[in-house]
Image 1 (cartoon, helix red, strand yellow):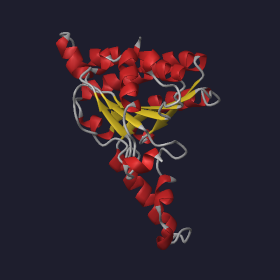
Image 2: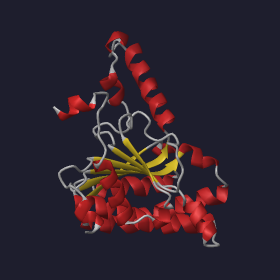
Image 3: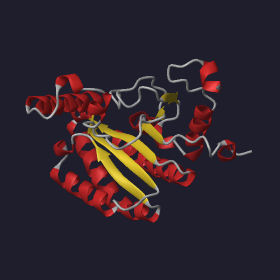
Image 4: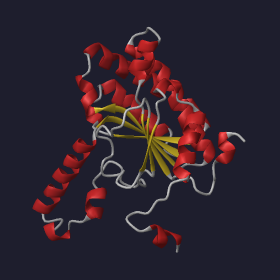
Length: 247
């Protein structure tokens, strides 16, 4: 029986998030510059997106570029932005063909003007697609996102639009960049690293974490299927006991 045949289509996660890690190490293993790894990782993005869409998973979020990544060598950052621009422009046709809507979260104003322009254009050109939402986290960090939400909430309270005593979980969630999206149920990190790296800290409060030694450029459909199968064998209690869940 193949991996995809082992997946219970009635127990699919509604939202999968992936920390795409290992491009640099993969390139080094192949005697190439780190940028070569990033370019090779685009194939993995396409594989993951198409596989999720085919399975019927409504939301996929990929950690593409963190706010901390701006501190990488200038030549690498420049190459990454160039690759992002090229990928956005070449993948619009594929996204529309697969009925996938593109979305982005993060400090998009910090992106190079040309990147932001083409990103917003691609988002607009795919906005009516309904099969799946593919979200790219760009110039994103969870601490940045939570600070921005807190700042906006403070301004609302100062303006009298909200009382401090009324602040609750929903108030915060309405000000996050992921407003309107369900929280990820499954978080995958590639390359054998066991950390979250400032990614969706609020949203993954009850996500199942899955770590694989596979470097991102080698990540394929079967790796995604394995993660989903592992997810489906876990007991999700959300603070309750096993006996309560079985009732």
